[in-house]
Image (cartoon, rainbow, N blue to C red; front, top):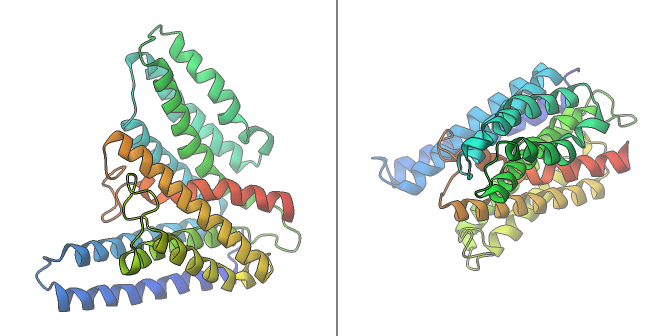
Length: 313
């Protein structure tokens, strides 16, 4: 896979945004909390530093080609699956099914994506893993919390493996006149969805008054949602020239993926509140765990993938 010039420009643009954000963060720390005692400023700078690391990692994967992208998202799926299953109900009877999830289903899903076996990777988890993994647990003969244990493991696989695998699967789409540039679709999707997350946070902090779901996430407000979605949709539409979409198509797709991203964050917040935790993990300073960064992408990626597959291939 050749490196498209448009991808280089997009990565340079993101780097420029991060440089500006870093300078703003340093300025705010010097003016507001020079001793590092302002939690809002410190959280902001931790998030910016983490974004530098994530952007560098994604850039290296993009520049490495299809193998790099598939391996990166397989590792992200592994980490997200571990975070999810850490909070779920389990019994000794589930050990073999959990081992199968990590070391059989996950690598098989990404191998199928890498060889573009769409007919298999589109049904491996929602059909075969969904039906056969409970059998493995049932054969161990432990009925206590069986439905809860099985359902939580199935949900973990769907969210952390099946949905995430649709990001590298975008590389397999054969769009007439856009051959060899599908990696830009991944970059566009992640940029648009993650920008929406950031701008929802910013607009919410500035003008947020009315929570969308107060019991789930008081910080997610209607003002933040509308401001973030509109800002990211405009940014996604402005990048239409590097995609196979027209300007109106890019705007419509950006609106769809940002709204789906918000739904993903809301659903994953509901799960965290049910489990009594604030974050899925603590590996990314200022962001929580890997699943805290992937929660919006996991809902947007499959929808984006299938819309492109149905209408552009």
